[in-house]
Length: 339
Image (cartoon, rainbow, N blue to C red):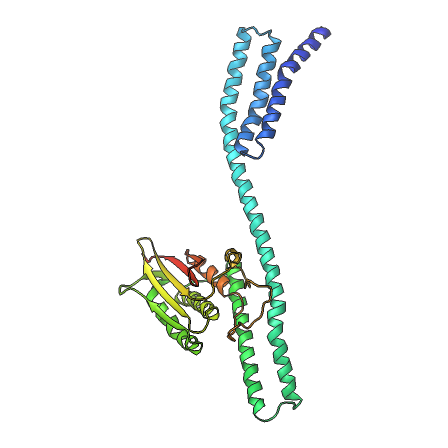
């Protein structure tokens, strides 16, 4: 009796172990391909190993008992294999989702670190200037007509700091998902006209030709007009800061069957290819020297203008892109049309 049991175990192992080895090799070969395939193989390995083990024990004879066993295993496979496929798909989606969440968390953490580094540098620079000028006034070092010039400079630096703080607050609301938009039908052309009128004096001071080209028909979008004006303002300010004197900036708008669009084209030097993928990141200016004053003497802003624009457009279910042109670069926003 004992010898018969040993033979039975040996025959079973001889039939099932090769199936398990082949299944393990198959799992190893497909481990980086499809989770659904791996789940299916895991289900089939015990079923096939049991089947082969029973066939070997039965001496390769197709008996009634083996027929019943085959029917049972076939039913088990028919039930468990679809279940394994469904579970594999769910697990695959969960794995992809978890990977995306981890990547987003890493990107957010990197963004926070860069923001902290930016704050420690760019906010400290105007504060140091304000402190130095205030101490000079307090100690009586500055006299006569220089007093008014120092006071004006302090006011200018304070306004710059205030703009930075406003941008920080806006960016924090966007990142926290706490942004509240008042959506209503607005004509995109009217917002472009408003931004154009506000920035023409600044552009004229540097000899930049700022103009708009729009259709005669209305371009209605569902948007928060304040937020959309902020987006266009940031894009135009960025274009002015990077366009040389006697250059040209053109605002255009239009619509297709599915969306409205607006572009800001400048005749500046364009965006370096390596900077294009990061142009909408917080405080990214494409250079390690984060000077708060641009080459033409105009305030370069907080370094968050494009990031804020991207966040506000995303909140409108729109898209924003940047690309180089033969001369200068183009920023384009796309928004859903109003119903």
